[in-house]
Image 1 (cartoon, helix red, strand yellow):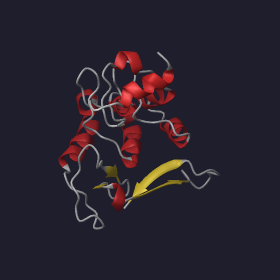
Image 2 (cartoon, rainbow, N blue to C red):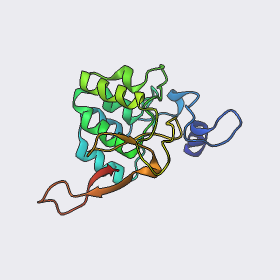
Image 3 (cartoon, helix red, strand yellow):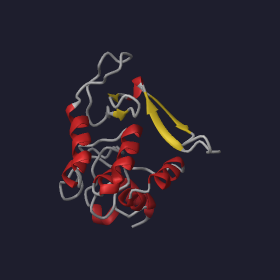
Length: 176
């Protein structure tokens, strides 16, 4: 099977429409382990910043249907990485091929608490949208400054310097 067919099979819903939110029919055939999976699992948040900036997708799946978000939740060092993905907007309810969500794979209480808080936030805290409800297409964006969750319309995403000595804007940030 060619790579184009794999990508098409990966995102095609029952009506044959290409949809990035559709879970793949057979993760073993279309999944591949990416550098973003590895960096997420190992908690290398600066590497994750570089890979996100290079347009690698956190929604790519491995052979078990895990996204990079699943990988970040599954490692004790992954909390910073998980916050990074949440600030870029991600579906925390997405299940892997075995039916596990990032919450199911969370290894620390702090990670479970953050994911639970996100999942229990059902409406946007912003004023621009009038409190839109979150679902798998209207995902939550985590604001690191106020630690609330906003829809895409109510938040601003950009890259910033990590600290005073940085010469390159590499840290992805979401703020309200």
